[in-house]
Length: 184
Image (cartoon, rainbow, N blue to C red; front, side):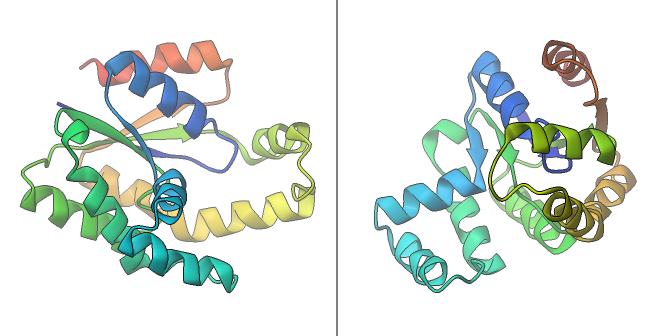
């Protein structure tokens, strides 16, 4: 069973690469953003709760995101494996996930860190041309990533679950590198 968590700064290619890999492995690509949007669209009890935070411009609390992840990992298509993209974002969420996976007998996850230098990330995100992607905003997002999410790299390295892939190469080369590191 393949269970992968994708880490990396914004613009590292996590979404693109994790979707490609999920397709080739025939397992679900689970993006917390997608789960959230789907739950709100379907008006599930958790989706309705989440909608109230979104409507008031607040971040959806960790507990609610964790409940959504727990619900999603319990679905039938996730029993043969999954790729998590966008969760966990901090060590407390990683600890929650570790306990959850033990409880549902799915422990054995590995973590792929797409390593990309900040200057490359800034250039990639500026090239996307989104209105909200000014260099200042992008650098601020990188600061938040480094302070909140980057500690996960050490957390998973300490548990011998970390696989690092150079994300500063062509998408095809990154895909090849991913296939090599998860093949072992």
